[in-house]
Length: 544
Ligand code: N01
Image 1 (cartoon, rainbow, N blue to C red):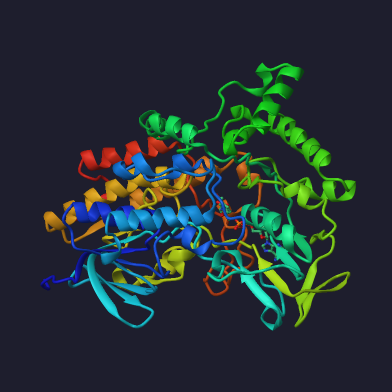
Image 2 (tube, helix red, strand yellow):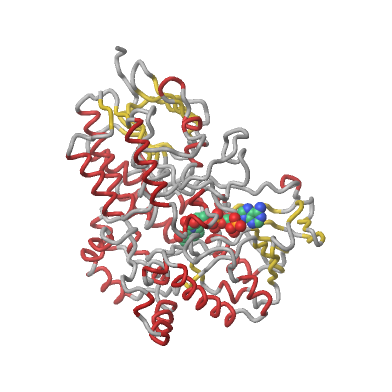
């Protein structure tokens, strides 16, 4: 058996919200840690997604770290839903306060990871060819960090400015006097379109699928409000562990059938003027499961769109006709619908008027060419799996992670894949970590991983590896929970439906199998499952 002398006990990949807390926990446990981060600073999502309009859909105070006790006492959020600059400042402040940067290597993209079967360590290779070894690797690479561009012919030919919302430059981007195209109307598109509309010379929005967007109803926070919210932190953090996905809001157990016509209308009006996801995850619970209930709410929303959009044809185009409310991520908007009342904004329905190609000077649709100075791609991500599949990860017997996932991802509790010992996944497919209110869903999982990593290192354990049986059972449970409901009837990123063809997901031409990528289950239930494993000797893992 080879002697182990890895450079680090643990390498963490990513210095976003999860990676930062993971580093703090592992250091507290006395482990030798290095974090490798592709970006130039901390913050992950809030470092990269700096497009105009980027803002939280979860209440700022519900989204901050709970472990930073002293910072909780002093940090004032300026708005109920903070914008990207404030979030970036917050994560930098946390990094300063906990002296995190000294163990983070920035501008360092991990390109490959190889498990050494003699030493039971991982060799991690970076973009510069440098190789570092660690006994344990934790990937905190983010659920939404692998941006995708659509496969439109000629995309590389366009001579104007090209932007992807998830790769927005640090320098100012101006729209004044410019003819701007935005492709994509998901949560990101809804935010960026609203901002670009305010200053662009002319904005053309290419919409393939209309979304059920709801008002964010953001507002500034006064000093008095902030003091009141702060006084309630202990109760708030306690509640956030108990709601389904770590949000302040939770499903209303009263079904829509408990209300008469006027009562339901009042209930919907109250929700519509409430904060953030109160008008999704705060609604009568049957809206998520029952078609009639869902149609009552979406009919209410459709009428709101008709009230808010002046041009009746545009209003009808903005009303979804192909999916139930909540089966795709619901965007929160701040004046999105009113953007279409501006003279400088035009909506092109891509299904009626398909994009045929991008030319040197614009976009050619079936109805002719439109000239542009800038194209903004708000076309999203290879969610859940993309960041991991973009690293060449090779486990036991030379088997790659891409090969292991060629028929869709399989995992044990979303934290490990069999054949990849000592590799823990944070915020990948099939786990609760990062799915929901990100920090709340992640924190208990990160603590569990830190404890496990400490156990591995201090007990001199060579290998921890999910068994194929445990992996199969969990992966089947994930699919079973997602099948049969309204969710399964809609094309969404949760099933990887946004990956346009089989090459996009990196498998070289194999047809993509439609599998559920997230996990449907309550945060508290998921956390309890992990804790039970820790208490009972980690069943489902082979430990040697
Ligand atoms: O990405 P998306 P996103 N031609 O995949 C369209 C989080 N988030 O970046 O629906 C034309 O949802 C595509 O059309 P269709 C949030 O978790 C959070 O907006 O596939 N259009 C769709 O409209 C969310 O789930 C926050 O028909 C094309 C859009 O591009 C996740 O990020 C804010 C096309 C992609 O939408 C991803 O959201 C923002 C083509 N060829 C985002 N290809 C906050 O919490 C794609 N599209 C604040």
